[in-house]
Amino acid sequence: MTSRLARLLIATTLVLVLAAPAAALAHDGGPRHRTCRAVQNGAVPRNLTAQQAQALAAACATRAAAIRSADEAFAAATKPARDAYRAAVAPLAAQVRPARDAARTACRADRRSQACRDARVAYRNAVRAVAPQVRAARQTLRDAIRPAAQTHRAAVRAAQQAFRTTIRQLLGRG
Image 1 (cartoon, one colour):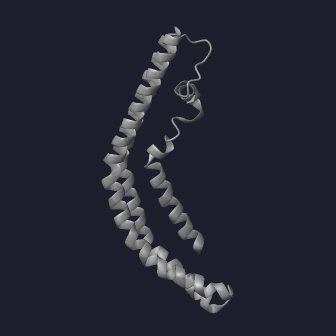
Image 2: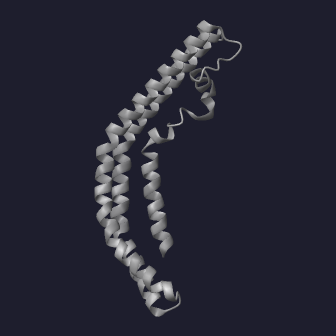
Image 3: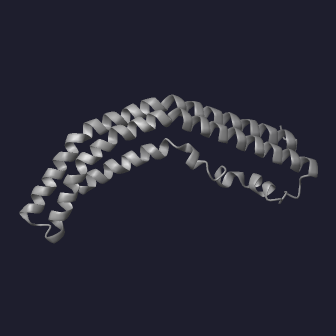
């Protein structure tokens, strides 16, 4: 029924969301990086000297620039694959849309009527007809994005590790 299309759309959305780590990193690393945000806002931790605060600000800026660069490289590397996926899935969604609208219209008045049942069957058949093509397009997208995602993760890990090393040296812990 409608839940199948909803699952299909959710799966598609999930793939697109996973394909855009730049959006996930838009909050500057989340709560783990409060210190960088505090330093950027001028609130330096009490136990740091002015020179250490400047070095911390520079390390934060370097990390942010490296992550931003990795995000931009990922977005650029995956754009053709995402565009191809959208181009492949759009006509399939257009094939299903009339059956969905017909089912909604037929079931709006009475969900138990024969017209509603027939419309739901037609909708299910339309979704089943396009599901293999959507799955194939999704798999193609995953396969095309995988190398760029691995490169992105490696670049972000390297930036985070360099940041941690700098901070340890700065604080005399490493």
